[in-house]
Amino acid sequence: MSDQMTLAAETRDKAGKGASRALRRDGRVPAVIYGGKEEPTTIHVEERALVKLLGTGHFSNSIVMVDVGGKSVRTLPKDVAFHPVSSRPLHVDFLRLGKNAKVDVAVPVVFVNEEASPGLKRGGVLNIVRHELELVCEADKIPDQIEIDVTGKDVGDSIHISHVSLPAGSESAITDRDFTIATLVAPSALKKSEGAEANADEADAEEVPATEQNGED
Image 1: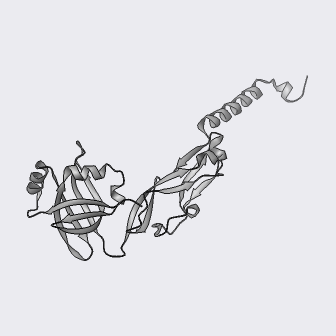
Image 2 (image 1 turned 90 degrees about the horizontal axis):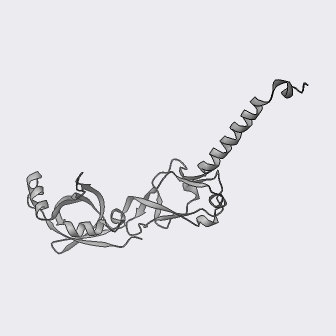
Image 3 (image 1 turned 60 degrees about the vertical axis):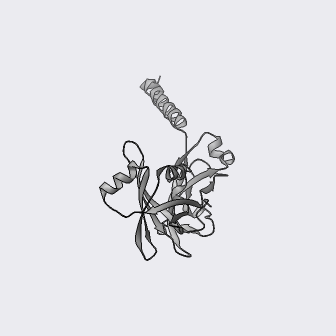
């Protein structure tokens, strides 16, 4: 499970674009905490501290304890807006989490035991259809990643969500179909080789005189 993170914050007295620009000039990032049947709380956080958490790679899948005026609020980051040119964070939305809350998250997929896949050992290619899985998880049991074992998989095999053992406290957000996560396909080099051989056979057949093809002298 992703580690719990902490982030200090201060309440915002003023709203609007002008106030937000002033905060950013001071190295702060405007943010809001919403949900949990409470009124939204407008806050701002230190940009450097936020960037450090973003750099972990699993910020969006982690519980973030936002400390506002000495009170810790249990949240889950839901959206981060970035500047289109500088990529600086401009705004953050935090979802307030209640007790026993369940959340929708996108969890990255990692494939393991590739050396035990006959298809991959023969040069097959793992065609990944979904790099993340949409899951509904208990807020305190959000996995860092979902490992999928490809042991025994051969060219032509597919991996569906029904083949994946999800950790306790997690279930697929998509329940109406057994969707594909990855397929194991033949390498392009092999396909090209097979195509070249087929073309060569056709060319040989065309070069044989009609009398020989018909068995005539």
